[in-house]
Length: 306
Length: 321
Image: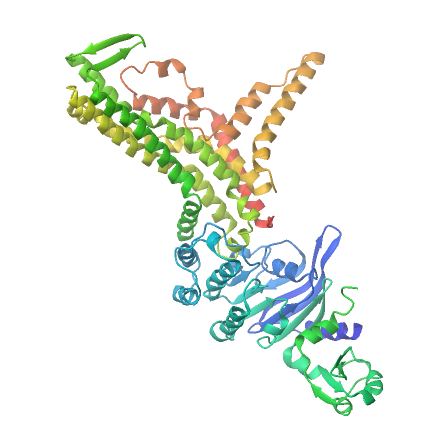
């Protein structure tokens, strides 16, 4: 595990040009509890980053610090602004969903659209209306009359119509059914995202976002456990379907994780671990493929709940 | 500026019931009760004037000087009939201020408002502006409309009875000036209401729960403690703390500033009692604005502004819950 972390910190410390978000020694304590423990990371502009970690690992705290919602220690630059002192300027370029179902109960759909149009210079009304037309929401409907899923739909319609340089989504699809979730991520990639924008997403449903992510940031107990682009991950981590007769040989190569599927062992290897491990070495063991983010996450987080 | 307009609209969407429907309901009750009374008078047989509560005069013809006096009273005082509206206003605004910065944390909607480009300063100032300007203006507007309806009903019913005051009332300059007199109290009202609005917004921004207890309980308990200390200290050393001063200058200004006319407490009462030809608007305004000569009013208003600033600073790092 240490090897993973060391390698990660090396990549994270590489200076990136045009970082949308960069943290140096970001620390947040709640009393004696260390929520975020001196983390460093860079998120370059034009990426879609999945911030992934178990409950209580510091994901939301990190995002709240970046959005200027909580004080913190260390350095944090978001689009070149310090969220502690320049929040008002920052919010012109950033949009976020910090939690779902937090729209006030008295708000009507049409009033919400009017209001955001009135206060946000980068809000595209026709876009929001198009998203809303796609749902069961009616203009005169109040939030208190909506199901939880509908509140989320309204919130997403408002946020997706804002042309922000950085979009932060903390569990954006909680309470939505699978059809709408798929549709939402589709819209996010096709309608919303472009090279000028950066999106940071946290979610528990990793398998739903992994195909749209360009970068992964695993966070565990207030520390970054893995930071890499999807290409780097594809090159570095290899999953091998090992037939039983070769299992012992494979185990000698110290897989990160292993499970059994249909009588075959599926083992996950880190090709950059100390000692080195070549792809051809692994190919000799069995069928080689890319691990899913969920499997990689499980392997990386092993012991988190112990 | 545009953001401010939308923030104020937002407050009115949320609090339409308190700022529009509540005064409208009171206005409707006034029209039904008093207007109904006028109409009922139409059906009774004679025109009665009650004097000093026991002497009943029934009048067939009215002497001209009575006409003039009645018309003058009607033209200058018709707005006074809506006094109940101005008793509702402070209650509504008091609870509005208490909830203004607390409810958004309780229902977590603060996270939505903070995701939009609106500063804490704009947000808190919009709420203070609603409490100090928008809500009083709405009540004044509803009050003037209600008074006019009642005046028309009253004039019509007395005209049918043979006492036609319509022409003399319309000819009286006070009839047209009264709404302006009422409006001209607004700046004074703002100065007097600032300490209360500031205190309530500060508590609303600071307290995690039980805002009402903090806002009302804290100053009253401080007052009680002070009185108790004063009692003990006075017993043993002969020194006296100025408890009365604390009650009047601090607690009363913190909690009572929203009451329209609270400044009359500092006005010479004799002048007020001598209003026998209807309300003398310019004189009332003069007396009321005279209270601004006291530095205490301005110190309290400045403290109110400081507390609003405190509420802005607190909202910056106040998390939900």
